[in-house]
Length: 67
Image: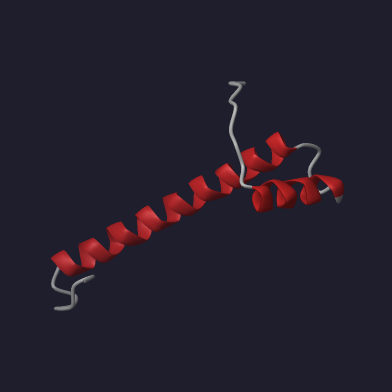
């Protein structure tokens, strides 16, 4: 696993610590990796939806555009 050094704002660091303190996660690293994984899955869903909307627009499904 790659090691990184990152800085957090005080409120974010306190939130991370509270999540570890409740034993939801065993470490801040585990939590950050989980959050990144969730964000990546969400991006896949967003990209899929955008592609479907673009296909519909290109096929004349609607005269509306995303703007």
